[in-house]
Image (cartoon, rainbow, N blue to C red; front, side, top):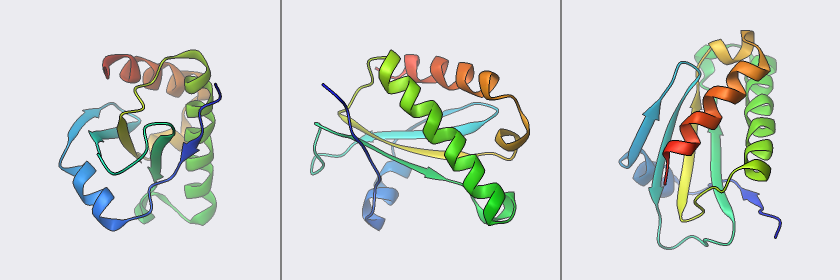
Length: 113
């Protein structure tokens, strides 16, 4: 079964996830929480790159890198679809190697059960 990654859209979803569990690493902060009203047949995930990280080109590149990592992660790992995820990027994602970022995020998502 192919898992579809959907973005969160409602403000109350973002606010409730921010009150949930979190995992920090040097590349991002991952918030996750079970939201009952969202479907568990799809992966609810949003990526945030704050404006202080740089201009639109830099922010979009950061989000593209994270989305590509998540596509690989969905193919290789069993991700808990009962949770909704919010990934807030840090500036170092723009400059570091893709492989290092991928390895760190894989380790963090293995911790989430």
